[in-house]
Amino acid sequence: MTDLSRASYWLLTFGLLSSLPAVASGGAQALKLFQKQGMYEADGKTLKAKTKATIAHAVVNDVVLAANAYVWWARRQAAETTLLGKLGAGTLATKEAAYMPATWMVVTEAVSLGLLLFSANIGGALTYNYGVGFSAAGSKGKKQ
Image (tube, rainbow, N blue to C red):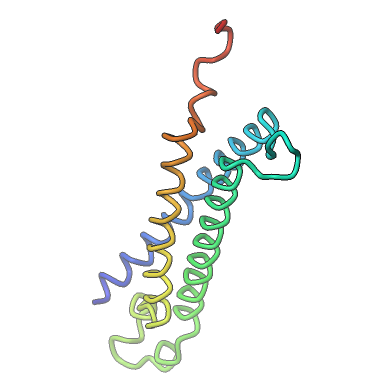
């Protein structure tokens, strides 16, 4: 089980690191969208459906990122401060064994997975229903 717990820790680490460019590029795309097309309908009060979807996508992904970052931090802290590790008690004394996630961490990750799939569905709608992300490639210099 130690190999699986170590692998899950490193996969979580790589997932968090890979989310950084995704957040940056998504934020830039949303900013460009809001600057070019605005956030509101013609009445100036009602948010566009595309805007609502963009905000929902960003908020859900931010919640998932924050929850996963907290789980990563808690696992890291447990690895450095485990009582068994300090006492040198058998095989549980290794730092790798201390990376074993607690039950609340597994539940948090399962909920995060569900939220991530929900957010991916919203992202798919943004791309395929609203065309978000397609306008930047190849639109410079072309007359329509």
